[in-house]
Each structure stands twice: as structure tokens, then as C-alpha cells.
Amino acid sequence: RVVLGPHVGGRVLEYARHGENALWLDRAQDGVTLAPGQPSPGVLFPSAGRCDIGPEMIAPPHPELWLGPWRAEIAGPSRARLISVPSPTMGVQLTREFTLAPQGSHLTFTQSMHNVSHRVTRWCHWARTFCRGHGICVVPLTPELSRFPRQYVQYVPGAMIGMRPEDPAVRVRDGFLEVFDTPAHPKLGLDTYAGWLAYLMPNDLLLIKRFATDPERVYNEATGLTLALWYYRDVVCELEPIGPMEILAPGETASFTEEWWLLPYPFPAQRDALDLARLARVAEEALAG
Image 1 (tube, rainbow, N blue to C red):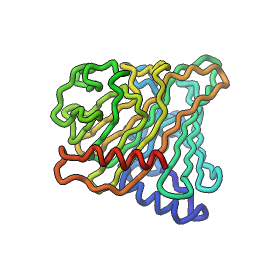
Image 2 (cartoon, rainbow, N blue to C red):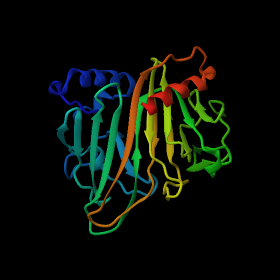
Image 3 (tube, rainbow, N blue to C red):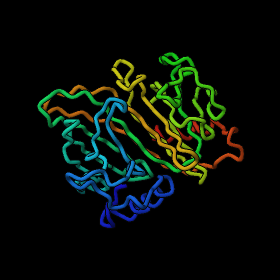
Image 4 (cartoon, rainbow, N blue to C red):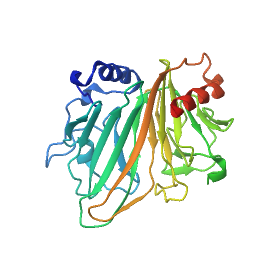
């Protein structure tokens, strides 16, 4: 969460308050930082609007990017910047920029990865946003480009990835993947190149994310994912757009941008009866505006 302060305008503070209704926040984490030379203070993951770099299964530990100190700056009207400490294991330093549009709820978030090491790095951007749980996630699919028999995979116990998942809370309908209840296993992976998703929360808030994809590039997650979803019971849903592999020589930088919209939208009386066509129209209107 970034608080820009009242001098930037009351609308930013109002947006932050609405954001707290959409994002999952663990207040026990407020003010927790990693002390140099000390073990992790027991916080498994920062909550709310976090981000990361990967790939998940091969990236070395980098607690300083999770819990280390970040320098905050006001970058201009309705703009804020966060700058990490360098990560010795990853060889990179991260910068995050947040820009709120003059009107509406359009927020642009860009994470830049700068190689500060003396070696070539091969990491990917991994956006990870904790939203309030037990919502409905809708993702447009690109079946002509998918490598998966059912257009998604499901991570199952035993470090296995199910290529033909069957989960009563997940279905493909009318060109979308729809997760309308809590899955039996929390993590799902997709290789869609549609470049957006929508997450509808039980408190009648719709979060839309847009992000760039490129079928000509290498995605170096274990199964070449462009997007992952993680449902922790009915508490949290994590929305995880994933960028392609960025091969950076020393001194080079690569960036990944997400755009967010937060809109009012009624939660359906029946979870499995969401009007997908209507929701898609609302999302496409926001994306076009």
C-alpha cells in the first residue's frame, strides 16, 4: 500500500480507503522489516498490493526484497515511487512506480528490475496482489495458443502439476476460465495471452487488471505461465500476472506494467450464475477508457 498524503489530493486518500476494501491486509505486518544479519521476523509474506520476481521454483531466497527497507518518494502529482535495497542473491534492485489517473480509479503500476551485479541475470516479473477472499475470478482465454489440454493447470500435493485438472469450483465457459468458489487445491496456472483478468469480491467490488503478454517470448515459469491464481481457503485470493524471462546484462533494466481499475459491481445471488457477457462488457469499457 502506498499512501501519498493529503497534499496530493483527497481523491487519492479516498481511493486508498476503497482499496482497503478490496485488498487483504494483515495489520500484524505493519512496520515489520528485516534487520540486517538477522533471520526473517516470522512474516511469511507481505500482504495486499505486493509484487515479486521469479521464477518461483528456481529463484534463490531474497528476503531483503520482501521485508527489507524501501525508500519512498513522491514522483509527481498522484505519483509515488518505491526503491528497494539491492538483492545480493538475485543481483537486482527493484523500483516500483504508482500513478493514479486524473479521473476515475485507473491506477498504473510499473515494476523495474535493474541488474546491479557483474553477471547476466535471467529473472521474470511476478506481480502478486492479495485480494479479499472467496470472490469469483474471470480470465479470458486464448485456446489457440494454449499448451494445456484444459487451458489451465492445477498444482496438487506432492509437488505435482495436474495437466488435466477436475475441480468443481473451476470451469471453462464461453471463452473464459471461471473460478466461482474455493478450489480443492489453491494454485492454478494459465498460459492465456488475452492480457487481462477480473476479480469480483463478495462486497460488490470488481478489480480489473491489464498486463502485457507476448507469445513470441519465453516465459520461464515451470509450465510457461503468464498468469497464476492462488486461493487460500476463503480468506485470500492472489492474482499473479507473470512476465517473460528478462535476460539482463550488468547495468540493464527491464520493466513490467499492470493497470488496475476498481469498480462497483453486484455479486451474484448464486456463485455459479455470474453473467459473463455483462461482466466482460464492463471490463472492456474500463479497458477502452
